[in-house]
Each structure stands twice: as C-alpha cells, then as structure tokens.
Length: 56
Image (cartoon, rainbow, N blue to C red):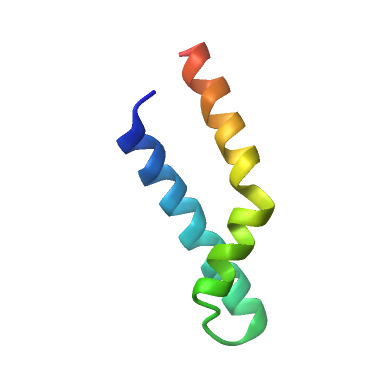
C-alpha cells in the first residue's frame, strides 16, 4: 500500500466533506467536520482504497 497516496487522497476527501458541510451550515465547521468524516466515512474509505489497491 502506498501510504503517501492513501493519506493524500484521504485528506482531499476530508477537505471536500468539510467544505460541503460548512456550506450547508453557513459557517466553517473546522475540526467538527473532520471528526464527522472520520466517524461516518473513514472505514468505508479505507476499505475502498484497499480493494482498489489489490485490483491494480
């Protein structure tokens, strides 16, 4: 597994989630949105990344 690529993609997804949720809320949610992403999507993201890495 390419850890650097994994972390870069994860950071991109977290920032996208933070932006979307902050827009919905009308304010910068900051760490709150990051924690929300981790709780809601981190496991799914890891699973999908590992599946794609194995099939490459």
